[in-house]
Length: 355
Image (tube, rainbow, N blue to C red; front, top):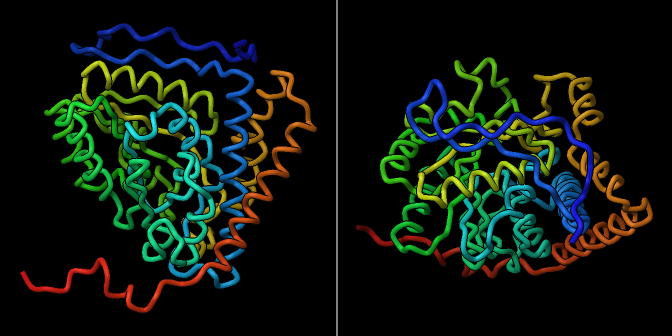
């Protein structure tokens, strides 16, 4: 199958196993992934699905059909799609924070059951009891969706330990944000993961503002890919707005972990267009800044350029867009017409006895 020949900027040569300032092995510098035409189309389809799904979720939240918190993934689509396209569903495990809808969609989970969960319906993937922030799929080895900042990193280390203990060849990917990167439990997990050489990729989705404070104001070391160095965990900084850069870095990270070298850290430099959650007016940044990012770095527009270079017509893209809009519309209709959980379900899956 022919590969795309899209011109790309010159890249640095692969790093030597032992650099001048290190006395230990280092991963090679990643190359952008060389996607086939079909892979590019699939990346585009998944990223548009996430974008349209999240836009619809925002609308339903505004109508009062989604309760509680709702954290949208708009702008960060290339991270989830680029990473999870390199994983093996059913073998590798994934865990993330509360901005989780996009990750589930990128893992191929049915939009209907995700939207139903958002609206608190019985047909939801957590039976309507988890909502936006707590979605799970044991079948897909997707372990949430966690509302406690940074908690998923410790649990991810546990998943990595399970892969090693069971000898199943799987790798855990634990996503967390720039805000969670300052949590103490993150560094306890780093230490344990490196000591035990766990097969885990720590992914920092650095969307620049955490809950509302610039990473430059909240982190003494704002080059977050360096955060694992004191634990001898190597890090790579990646353009998280380019799906091919993300996929290429993920391939390199998988090679490192699967070779038995222990954990690795990927810092994805990305950007969210909306506030931290639907209740955040995002007054801590200017409209001009957001608009500039949309115009210069939008991940969907970026993959469109690769598709154009690969000979994909505008009509093909329009057809995909129309198909996605119907999928999302059908998911919203499914969620709105699905029944709510039965009253007795309030008492299921709840610990009520004393210990």
